[in-house]
Length: 401
Image (tube, rainbow, N blue to C red; front, side):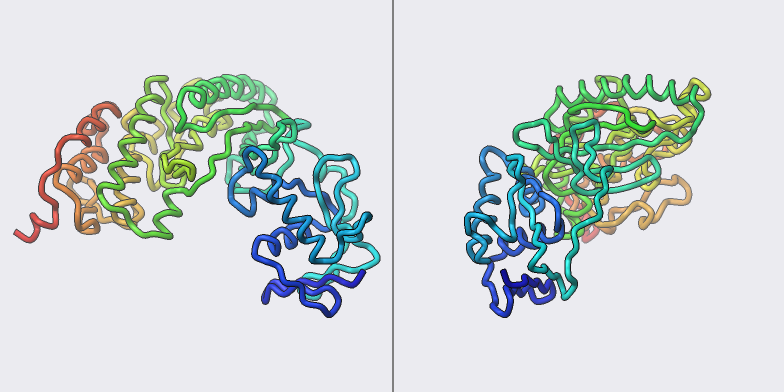
């Protein structure tokens, strides 16, 4: 068989000297298989990369059909393929394993990876890591494939690392980890706008949560792409999330990390989903377990954190403060640190960056971000009720007068 070469700059694919005409999806499938040269890849994983969501029903067959069309176009559709192989154990995975005929990407001949038993190990003998989604001081966020489900559904793995080697503290963290897993399970099962907990486990002194993967776009990314939102758009999102927050607070949980990056607009219905509870990070913070009280905890993101939460004393209204700042970010496209602050009241001055906002809506936002917790709304229900009252003239109209 002739050499296969791929030029990612021009998207040209050649078999020997012959140019091969591939459509966009076929090209991406070929590129993904080539990037995993020497390994077998599940069609579900390829589907997830191609369409940015896990397959449902028999959608994996779409990828299988693309692979067979690739075989035909690459003249590899004989009884014993020379290039694209299916895994012999009948797993349904495919891979490019050419040896006699080199495969090149941008002129570089691909080589099979050195055998590495650890790379093929499954987390908890179940989850195969697809890619890293993020990393921070508390651990890793991974996108993984659940090999024990028939659909090989995608899920999010939160890998949490303890901040100490003290065995006594580790045992307390372990106990708290199990308690918080029960909390996350209850919350996810009770509301469709909170990711479900699929499982939790411990490996090599690391703690893991397996959570529902939400296919969609964070509010942060939405603003980057589409620009700031209108009052009606923001009101719809915040009203929906306040109902979620009311449910969380009724279960005596403070989220602690509300911000645009932790709210995903779900692709299937455009509903906002609240992710990444700060209570998980609290679980592995040694301050939680050393002193026996929560005063030292300051989990969250500083830009969207209330003053009392930054001091280690979060309240339910701390989440409302973060919601208010999130709404203001959606309205203005400005991060909290980019906004001026009144030197006397220490309140944020944001209205000049949002031209068409009703007086009522602006007042609700202002109250939600008051410096002192007692000056804010007491509950999510109260804030939602205020949000749903009839609006008045816009600030722009008032300024003109």
